[in-house]
Length: 360
Image (cartoon, rainbow, N blue to C red):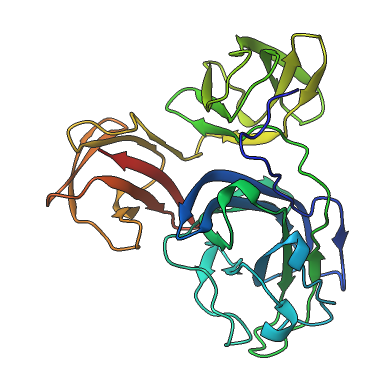
């Protein structure tokens, strides 16, 4: 598939190796996705989403993510949790409590390292058998230099059971490498609606693209085609697509895209998972950008008292709510400036889900 990023660079993430130093946990399937890029004073601000899979069967308590430029990769030995001097020119670090509900931490074992915290959101999906998919979104990394010449990125993740404040042992590790990310989509995601599942994706540029086949599986092994959407073919601007599965399977639904060129060649996207169980939570915006400063959203199987509206600095915005069935309308109580806000849902046992809202 010749659908490529408009920017002349590639995000790098460690996908290949899950190294168990002991055996209390396993880490796998690291994934970086680009939300957007902006220039600031000659530097680039990357807004990223990072997700990984963690087997928590053995009682893991904490996980830590580090990001570097590939050319500045510190490559710690991870015999213990790396301290600031071992991290070198790290672009950012994220600290996570993997207890239920999963949550972000504002501290790192080496207290001279300050993790990214404000404005981040975190969520997890139970994949069964002790395996969880953990996702951190709205990660802002500052990369020196102009946006037209961004370097490759590397991300490492390590986890531990220990609350040692200085040198905790590393119980499992997912190391980055310098292999290009094989997914050519800028974004591919799914959302549970009231009685359906929405699958959406974004391309940054298209060359010779023919169509997308949307495929679904009940076990992530055998896939069937649900539908087909024509690609724009040739485009130098971002394009968005959406497919609605009106008859999703009960339980886990696995989706992937088969991306086909006009010459007949094709490749597959990564696989995403949406849970359609009887108690699964549906949380989805109903229109974005919003109209008339009213944020409309769907919420099913979760207490609406967990809803928060935050500005990009993490400050809470007061609001009123009205409800019709599973649909809600949120109105800020005071006049808010135009810009991007975060609609956040804090769940009792599964961390936080969040949506970016554009308020014109």
